[in-house]
Length: 485
Image 1 (cartoon, rainbow, N blue to C red):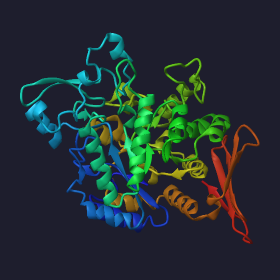
Image 2 (spheres, one colour):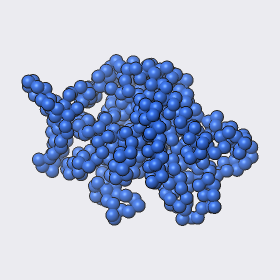
Image 3 (tube, rainbow, N blue to C red):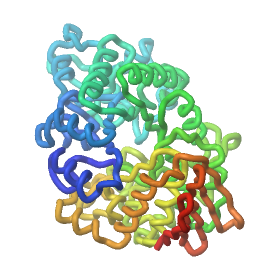
Image 4 (cartoon, one colour):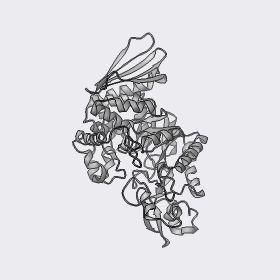
């Protein structure tokens, strides 16, 4: 399960733990805690930490993380690319300039372009929002600097090559390791390395950095998950160098299969995808489109997993399925960092079709990897238009604040009860520790199977009716049929 601590049935870590080990027992075997560092309500919902080594006091303290880790695996974020402009490090640098012990920690335009930058250099830089990745900043000591800010002006990029940058990131890894965290996700790592004359995103030097950082994590007993939205072949390359990658191609491909009634593109991806993947349908961000599209740098020679016109139509169908709510939260319609994602709950992207939703989750759970369920998706959540209207941040459409009463009530919804049964089956059935296979008897069908000894589990899907069933059994037992409806 992936969740914010304060948006799923309470405000504190102990309250969250009570829900996961209580009503969700057996369904959730591990938890990814979205940024719980001080403070959680900055410019980007905790992804702009003021103090990356401190738990926000409103949520709890490090001993609460340690207590949770005794019950299950715990994942936390390492925000690799940047930190808050309100951080003690930046405030010290702002006061003292080059005399600060943190001089060199923050990336300036001059650091990357010591001889100046041409128009071509600047236009080559890739970033997830329009405009240049710099902010003109007057420091408290009166100095004016052109700071590198890939995301927002409040998120100051770190120079990861300097001793100060290396020490800062290592201190985070050490604190997480000491507190019982077992896996870390490298957030925004694709932007961490900058180089004059390059696009500054997922370059060979970035791969080298990821490899070295992952090795340091392993030395501290931490597995490393890399979060990258990009051309699908880049994910395959990254998977060879780290413990885990996200399968961000899966969500739009599952939607494509259900909307177009064809299993071909999904099966093609299953045949080549890396298996050391965390599988998702929804996250705290939007539903990625770039992950199955053509390579933006060479569309002719590097096509996507689905034709361009079908990708465009898929986006339109998501908008229509959500009664155009997602259109109001996506792209230039709202304050979005990521213009290549559709902001919508996955349940709404499927038109709130319970059968289709359970089929989508079953496909996710049968594809090799570690299945991860977002807290809103766990409750088959619907678009939060009130929160969107309040914040005018597109991604908030899928970041609802659930009270404890809401959680307990939604756990009784028929679609949620079936989803929890499905999750418990995935967590407990021995077949999922065996061999995997996939097939399709017809274009509108999909069969995914697992077998270990006499234990087996087989998912059969009819994409034209958006329905399916799971047939499973153990040695000597009669087959059990789990209808997805």
